[in-house]
Image 1 (cartoon, rainbow, N blue to C red):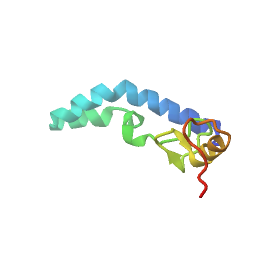
Image 2: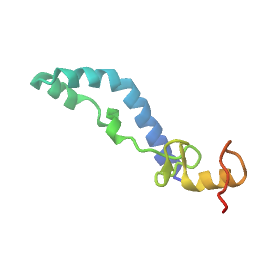
Image 3: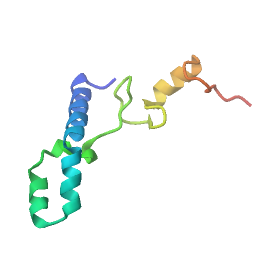
Image 4: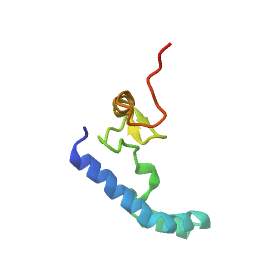
Length: 92
């Protein structure tokens, strides 16, 4: 499991991205020198590029399965205990 400070930092970034999304889109659409300077003055954490996909349960950044929103380890455990509908372990 990730450190709680890392997960909290990620949540803070998500809030900032949501807060500045409309403003950033307008400034990018103008594409002139004045709007680019205004874009530089916005906080860096307001950019969507700085977000990282993390497991909803553990906060693990690697092995993330986008469709389910969890890491591969949690996915495997949940699949083995039939906690994800329609998913079962393959056997042939």
